[in-house]
Amino acid sequence: MNFSYLTDPAHWDPSNPGSIPNLILSHLGYTALALLIGAVIALPVGLYIGHTGKGSFIAINAGNAGRSLPTLGLLMLMVTLLGLGLLPVLIALTVLVIPPILTSAYAGMRNLDHRVVDAARGMGMRPWQVLSRVELPMALPIMLSGFRNAALQVVATATVAAAVGLGGLGRLLIDGLAVNDYSRVLAGAIVVAALAVLVDLFLALIQRLIVSPGLKGS
Amino acid sequence: MITFEDVVKVYPGGTTAVDHLNLELPTGKITVLVGPSGCGKTTSLRMINRMVTPTSGRILVDGADVSQQNEARLRRSIGYVIQHAGLFPHRTVLDNVATVPVLLGQTRRAAREAALGLLERVGLSAEFAKRYPAQLSGGQQQRVGVARALAADPPIMLMDEPFSAVDPVVRAQLQAEFLRLQQDLGKTIAMVTHDIDEAIKLGDHVAVFRTGGRLAQFATPRELLAEPADDFVASFVGRDRGLRSLSFDSAAELPVRPVDGIDLDDSGRPLGLPGVFTKDDSLRVVTDLVISSPGGIAVRVGPDGAADGLVSHHDLADYLASRRS
Ligand SMILES: Nc1ncnc2c1ncn2[C@@H]1O[C@H](COP(=O)(O)OP(=O)(O)OP(=O)(O)O)[C@@H](O)[C@H]1O
Ligand SMILES: [Mg+2]
Image (tube, rainbow over the protein chains, first blue to last red):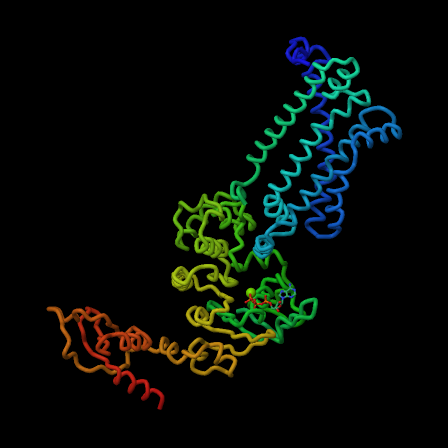
């Protein structure tokens, strides 16, 4: 086992479709799509449940259910149902990101200081103003931590795409194993880990920019 | 004027928080709602800006039934200082204060500029403007809470224990500043407290509630001390109400004896004596001086600071006795 695959300049040549930069791009593509679809589904549901308190059991159980669901198994099931392609991969990854996003959106709303929300109403904010100007900004730190969690998981798990013939960094692992090229497997593992760290740093930066300094340390 | 007409509030679950309340809070005055914990003060206050809906009865502001008015617009026209300040933690002090003007359509810039002036009015320098609530002391937060409620210059202010979260020294300071502010502004103020001393100090009128949400007495502080309506009010007002009621009586009429036997400087000012009072002070001040001064004597001084009379234990006791008869 050595770093020769990783250090070979040919494997970093963007004009080669199977090169590492291109695999990173497709990997990030699956990740971003899954996060986007997952957020579009889970955020409104989590916020609604947290805001109204109706159906709290969904939010609480979603966290546990999500953690116990095997993504690879789900992917295989989707492939048998839907055939090969991007759709089954996206469904499996989206199912993975929904629980942390939903649970954290719920927790963010539940943990709001009700006295502050009360003050907002008492000063004459309409319901949507209370939500957008007070509740969401205050819930943001918890919501973002759930989103970062989801992003980390999906970056690591998006390797499954390669198992059903798609791209992404999983190619390095699966193809490497198939031809006993452990240098390639190692390269895949290292790049996935590095990508996860970079994505998390990027999201941490975003968090710094959009969370009010007044909420730091609370 | 704020009018409660036979207002009842029964919460789901059966607690009667307010029981057939009839009350008039006069325009431009401070009315303090006071009573033991859980007697319905906050509930009464929050029915004025429709944060709580009465079970029956009506609340009128200047003759108009609040239940007929747009909720958000009504609230924007009424300043609200909530228990524990309730500042927005994610907004700077300046933006907290600018909240209602912005809701009313002012530009952020104009609202912030006005907010800066308001901060000064409540005794906070401009250096606090950019801070976040978590970076303020409890007393500073309360000031910001008051400034925020004042920002849109509402004719009515609701204040729920606005000075409760601070130590007695800061509280006294905030109370004094508040009274000064109110002298300039002349708002119609409904204030809740469970501290009878605060009620007597700040209120033009005091509404004493008893447990179960019933009004026990509505009176001026002076009347409350002099003639409590019943045993409950008497015990709530406290055993030293006789002494405290003296703070409403001027020392102007108090007879004095000629200045004799004390050291004076060249311009007639008393030397080395702790206790002096003027005609503008209250009888409570004089009583305190007489009790605490070594010789049992208080010295009255004129506007120039020169001694113009003495009062002894006996003089004071005789005067108080003569007022009784
Ligand atoms: N949302 C609510 N649901 C049910 N009961 C309530 C609610 N709010 C208040 N109560 C009850 O109504 C009564 C009056 O409450 P309120 O908050 O008006 O009292 P308060 O005089 O302000 O007391 P404190 O001095 O402790 O603030 C209490 O018995 C309280 O438990
Ligand atoms: Mg209360």
